[in-house]
Length: 117
View 1 (cartoon, one colour):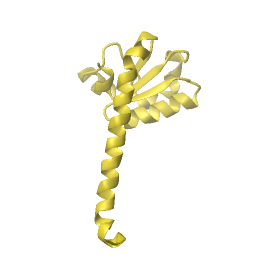
View 2 (spheres, rainbow, N blue to C red; view 1 turned 180 degrees about the horizontal axis):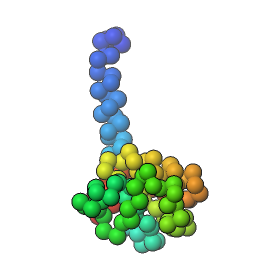
View 3 (tube, helix red, strand yellow; view 1 turned 90 degrees about the vertical axis):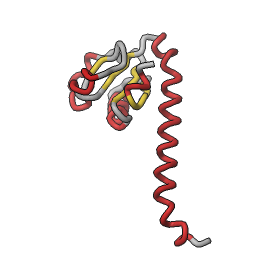
View 4 (cartoon, helix red, strand yellow; view 1 turned 120 degrees about the horizontal axis):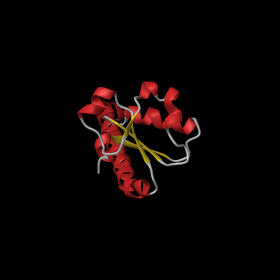
């Protein structure tokens, strides 16, 4: 079988592989939540206020991604921070921002429903 024969399937295989990777990573993050909550973790939801009002994880704090840089002072960098959003994309960006700004323990939980358990 040549590469040319497989080429139409490579993109689909890559997408499926990526989705499985994300699912497993977010599942592992959700499994760590009880321990992190026990240590006083901040659950940070970086969705828009309208999205947050519709539904959110109990006890979470809403700081939209576009406001995060200027509102970092509202977060305690000595506590673990669990970041969530709608799908995991904005929370990944927020987690990178927090790490870059000196937050030591940051976990991207992906969709906010992972942080609701």
